[in-house]
Amino acid sequence: MSLADLSLAEASELVRTRRASPVDLTRACLERIETLDPKLNAFVTVTAESALAAARAAEGEIARSGSRGPLHGIPIALKDLVDTRGVRTTAGSRVFEDRVPAEDAEIVRRLGAAGVVFLGKLNMHEFAFGASTVVSAFGPVHNPWSLARSAGGSSAGSAAAVAARLCFGAIGSDTGGSIREPAAYCGIVGLKPSFGRVSTRGVVPLAWSLDHVGPMTRTVLDAALMLQPLAGYDALDPASTDTPVPDYAAALAANRAFRIGLPRVPFYEDLHPELASATRAALSVLAALGCQEREVAIDIGTDAAFAVLRAEAHAYHEPMLADRAERYQPETLRRIRGGAEVTAAAYVAARQKLELLRRQAQAVFETVDLLVTPTTPVPPPAIDELMADMANLRAKEIVMLRNTRPWNALGLPTISVPCGFTADGLPIGLQITGAAGDEARVLALSHAYERATEWHQRRPAPDAQERPTGSSNAASPTIVSTEPPSRRQ
Image 1 (cartoon, rainbow, N blue to C red):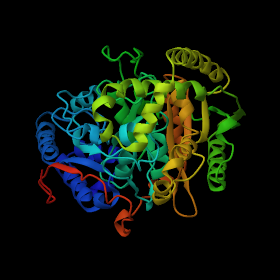
Image 2 (image 1 turned 90 degrees about the vertical axis):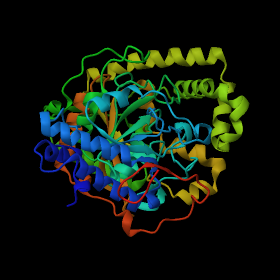
Image 3 (image 1 turned 180 degrees about the vertical axis):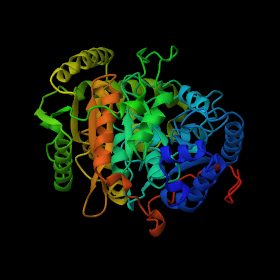
Image 4 (image 1 turned 180 degrees about the horizontal axis):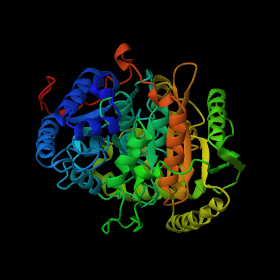
């Protein structure tokens, strides 16, 4: 096993005990980026020189005074809508092609304080306004399990990079499923925390009322370790909630005999047969762990959330439409301009309904501890098929996000964990959702399920596949640094 194959927690233990150095880990990731990313198209910017410098600094600090914690010296990457001081942040768009922030996002500051080594910025669906990442200034992201397939979206680069072992963890954002759907499609763990649990200050917004930021990793323990420094109150973020932050890694040992609710409508309707079968098998595993099932109903608020999304996305982009409209991808521009149709009265009504639904959603947890659903109703589609039918792309993406969008509307913490594979070898995800603020129980049941199965131990082999067509018109990634391998800024 190479260093890049280790989980974040395993790599962290080697660094802590000085059996491997942050420089070793960083070089291992950069070598895989050099070899595999031309096929995957996961990275927009690789900050190799600064990453190696940070790794050397971490190595020296650990030798002198010990580790700051589990993330010290660990290489991760950021979705390219997270502001990084002095490093281009594009949101996957030519609108921001030359945008270099003057300040770090709050989550970058927190991860930096934890000692993380930043490898670079990851490709995404333009402005996070989609679920397939076939709409990006940098071309589509290819799924490591099948290069002809979509890696999902909008955090596709984050999911593909983690699955292909290009980094030990990544940051994604999630407005309608953009962490969990690509996590499911790429066979990794994707955690969307409660609304307001993690600051979104300094993250390019899609819709302020629905945006979440969270970790994407290869194991549940890794997600818990990454969430720890991210979580917490940010007085400068209007959406941030001032609630206690538990020890998430310690919470993984909690009692597994949870009461789980199964919201059949709409989450279990019209499932692809292989996804339905995998979900039934996963529920059997949870039953063997002592969980008790109960069918529940919950008002998911999809219509209100969609109105809020359209209005807030238009509000953010409106100042740029006057002089930079031609720099947007046509499909993104169409979606943004559609938000102008939402009247002020309709927006206020939808926003009020959203708040009411979020309060009412807590009632379902009086009878169950957690909710369990398939992450997606369909497996990852082919990139060529999506690009050949752009007129119907939005309708297809709405199907892809059907099971994830409700938890953004309700602001609940939710995670996708691997729970099987289709006959074609494509990953399948199981989604576990908790009450607002209850990431601890979400992580505990996910960890118990993960330990009882072996799905997370499988790994893709993108190096054994030829890259398909479909991205020849993309802008080229930027290598903002390098030592080894042989790419320089």
